[in-house]
Image (cartoon, rainbow, N blue to C red; front, side):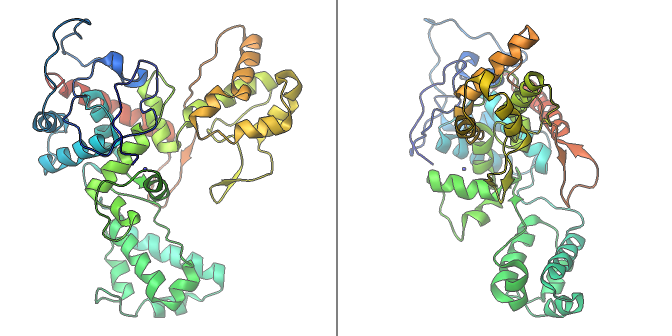
Length: 405
């Protein structure tokens, strides 16, 4: 999740961020950014707000940082505790990333925070002790370690003075869970065998950010705060969670005209909604049903594998009509997690073929059809459910933005 270089205002239909962001703090000159300077999916009209003044009219002076923070405070839902601290960390995240201080953008982040944690920096997760004991038992079976031996190992004292068993039985938050596994990996011989450096906590903080994303993003852009232990630990703080969460949500050129697809991407992975539309177009062109999950290649350990996916196989059968070789198809599909895939020959030619067959334009965005699975999820949920819930919170936030823009 900083190339610290300040961005100029964004053009309509262009990327939200054009690559680099700056190291210095701005004074909030992006606040009240006209809708025409925001990306299409976030150029939402604010209910009750006055119309944007035409070019040439006298512009108001840019608001100060204090005024921006006050505006953010008005956007927060009622009942949020430590409002000034949340507003301050949000402002710092946006300033560090070079994002415009526009109510629509803040509402997008606020909606995700409300959905993911109800504004708890380290949210409570019900049933964590049971989840951990099941994980230990499953890992023990994998490595041939009896359950009784694991239970005995957990009686050992841990760095905080309690036994590991006591810590497991009193777990409440993912931050506590992360610290537990870090200590078990470092201190227990059985922990080294069971986990071999693997920490099963993959998301955390008030926006439930992917730790892998945060670590990768911090390698690309300098993190704006001192790192006390690790980027992994920073994800579980309010400031780190908001910074990396705002980055994964907003710091990329989302090619959409409806914000719900940005929220779907937040849940399913960047460009999943664009890729799902590509899969739908491929299904039409090939006559083969496609799963609209937004993944175009097969992956193992987060890396693409050589074995062709159903998408790649269907494209290979259309290679002649697309006037592309299998090597060229693979080259373009490897771009599926980037903006560049949307400008690739495979993308443009596949849509041209599908639209010729359909006799009409086809959408470049579609809702990924993904069932959400996690030990923390106790009922059937989907990416679409998540995106629609966040969209509702976003539109509620826009009603609070009246008088704040």
